[in-house]
Image 1 (cartoon, rainbow, N blue to C red):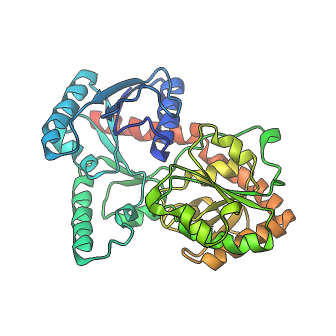
Image 2: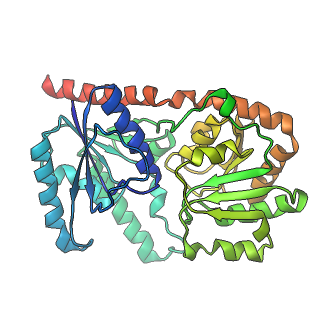
Image 3: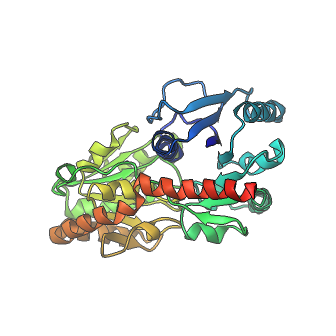
Length: 371
C-alpha cells in the first residue's frame, strides 16, 4: 500500500515529529507499506528523530508564508500526489491550511486528517479581546467546514472528540516511544523531578514553578529539571529568581536521549494548560515513573488512573499540584507502587498495537472505496 503523509517540517524535536517517526517507520518496516512523507520548507538534512531508511521524503519550497506562496504550495502538492499515486493520504498539519487539502488537490484517493493538538492551542496568552475571540470563532468554523471533507478525522483521546462537530471522528492514541527492559527502569530513588516540553503558554511552566516553591521549602535537596526549547518571552528564569528557587530548578535544551532522563528521575510532572495527548506521560510511565498532572483538556485522564498509577490534579490548582508532588516525595511505598502500575498501564500504547489500528483504518478505507 502506498501511503503519503502531508505535513510541515519533521526535522525538529516536537511531539508530532516523534510520533510520525515511530508510526511511519513501523508501517514501512513491519507492515510492508510504501511510505512517503511530504514536507514544507524543510532545509535540514539531519532529522532530530530517527526515521526508517525505507521512507521516501519529498519537499515543497515556497517563499515565506505570504499569500503569494499559496499557488506554489498547491502546485507542489498536486505534483507529488501525481508522481506518488498514493492509495491513502494522511494529513498531519495542525495549521489551518491542513483542513483544506482535499479541496485543493481534488481528493484523488481516501484521505485522513490527523489532529495532534487540542483546539485550545488557538487560545493565546493574554489574547482575550473581542476581536481575538471573534477571529478564533471564525477559525473554528473553517476547521469544522474543512474537516468534513476527510473520510476520517482522527483525534488522540475521547476528550478531543468533544471539540469537533463532525461525523467522521475516530480515536487513535499516540504510540509509545520506547519500553525499556526491567533492569533499566528508574529505581525512583533519585531526588529529582522531571518535566519535558517546549517553553510555552501551553506547557504552563509558570504554574509549575509556583507549585515547586513550597516543595523546595520542605525538601531543599530535591531538584526540578525542565527539558525543552527555550523561549525568552516566557521569562521562566526571571520567575524562578523572583520565587527564590533558581538553585532548585534547571532549564535544559531538548536532548535526543530523553529516555536517559526518565531513568534518572523519581517523579514526572505535567503542568500543561491543555494537551493533544501527553506523550511524555506515557514515556515516563514506561520507565516506571509515577506522574503528577493537571487534569487538563485533553489526554492526562485517558492515560493516568489517579491514585493507581499516578495523580491527577484539578486543572489550575497550583496548591494541589504542590501537595501531590510532596505526597510522592514523602511516601516512597506509594511512589514505587504507582510506578510499577504505570509501567503496566502503558503497554496498551505499544507501537505494534497502535500501528494495527492505523492499518485497519487504511485497509478498510480502500476496501470501502473499491466496493
